Length: 140
Image (cartoon, rainbow, N blue to C red; front, side):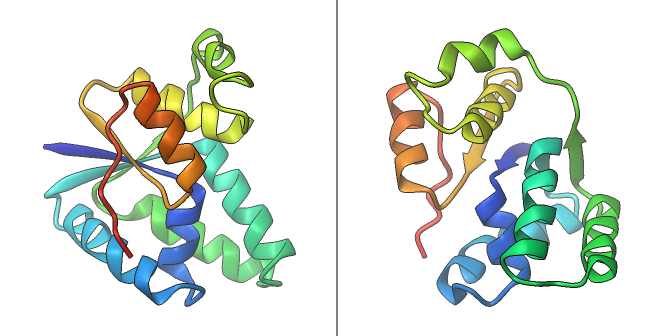
């Protein structure tokens, strides 16, 4: 079964209308996960960043964010990653991957054989390609 590690921007694009092309690009992954046709892996940092952005940038009420997170982590096909190999993370950050959160996501992929990262961040994609890490071809 395919494993996809999602970046924060993927989760935000899925639950908001900020970019309909991005939303449409990832909706099939979420639908497949709900049908247990693939696994969406989500690092706990991604959820932390998601909560921060939804509250501070989108001004979403905390109760609504709470419900979103509860629904997401209860969804079939979603697995929350809570452990991190910080030695691996620090081997990426800051030289290869300048954003610490992105380095955490890259580490999750490194420690999950066969996993593909899903992100809309072009700089992150470029760094991942240099590392030989597969990136989902989500073309909005």
